[in-house]
Length: 196
Image (cartoon, rainbow, N blue to C red; front, side):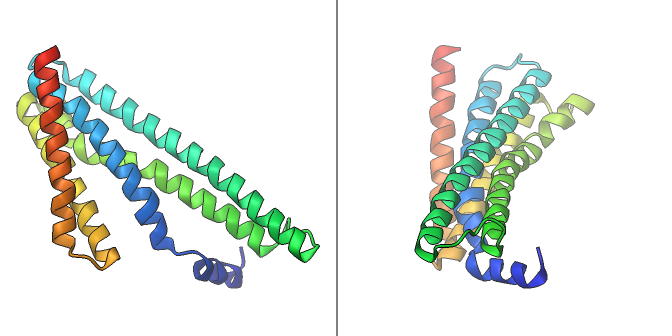
């Protein structure tokens, strides 16, 4: 895409929308799934760390692929509808225009953002578990608790960033998201205690 077309793309699309609507949403979904998996590790002490890491990796990759593909297809369909309306109004084919290429670039970026968010969550939350796997330190339960703390910190950071973007109180927004994450974790631990 030429420099002029790239500039028009940046003017036509609010790239912070990618962060607000897609990255944050998928990050929350991924983090809450991670909390569900790690809560079992906190409750059940003899879970092999390899099983926990495998479950985290599988869940985050599945979420990334699922959201990446579904958003790509949804955006492709929306772009086709939008272009068809414009083509009918203008009585011309827009197949190889800057508009067509910019819509392709946008849906590719949206798809990649959705795929990247769960991988970031996995990379951050699995670190203490990898340390346990490699060095047997910290203890698995402590590693799981650190993983939960990192997951909650991700949620707080995302909420804080959303608050700043929205012009709201970022600390309040971050704390609201943190309370939701902690409440979810406590509920999951309670459920794990009952059923395991």
